[in-house]
Length: 131
Image (cartoon, rainbow, N blue to C red; front, side):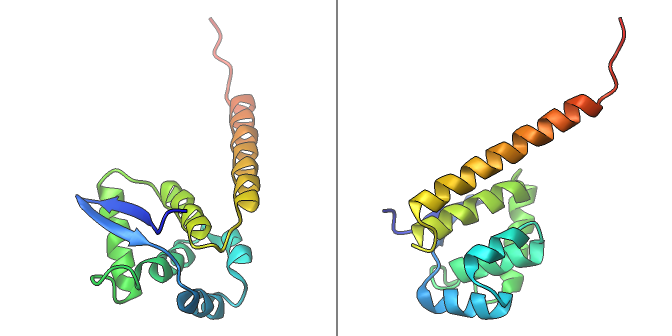
């Protein structure tokens, strides 16, 4: 297993791994376990909390959640997306031992099914162009 995941932003690399101490702190902040909290990763403030927990013990430049907000802004400016950040944090949970490989595969399949359903919905609701 990899020792950590890497987030590259504007030429800098940030190592990401959630330690037990920060996993406990994050659960306290979320008011739930880390896997149940995944349902709220669409909320940027929740996503930032996960990233803070993953980055603070691995990077000397990350000391407060506002550092993560700036990191997100720089990442987006550099061409990244919040969706990619959501996908990477799931990888971080796997690397950190919080998410099992079996659960990780199930999560990926569920996401693929959602994307397929969304694509079908978008295609069926698009107006047909006549020739």
